[in-house]
Image (cartoon, rainbow, N blue to C red):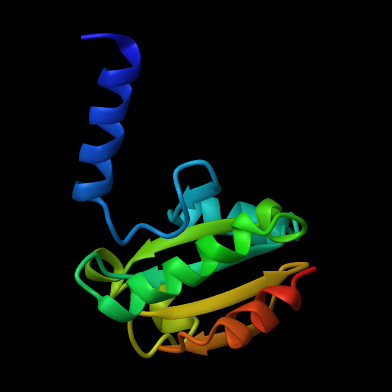
Length: 135
């Protein structure tokens, strides 16, 4: 089996195992950890936090919209996404402190502050407007 075919099979398998991970594999995605969140906030980095669940169809739709925006190029292709798994973090301090009501919540951060959020929204224009607040 040549390397290209091996890569294709591996990439396809990864896509099947992790279909609801925000943003494509080529995008800048940071998996949530308290240390990563603290670093991004204290350094005033701009990022979109996506609170998702692998089984959530609304989260999947949000991800497709974000991927489509990223495919358009600047400035969306430079978007950094911080992925927070709802099932692993629903009772965490982060979820409580940010008053996150449910999965499928997108929160835009700029200069260490929340600049906007969408809860369960899947409209392309709403998600684009949210991301635009960070740029």
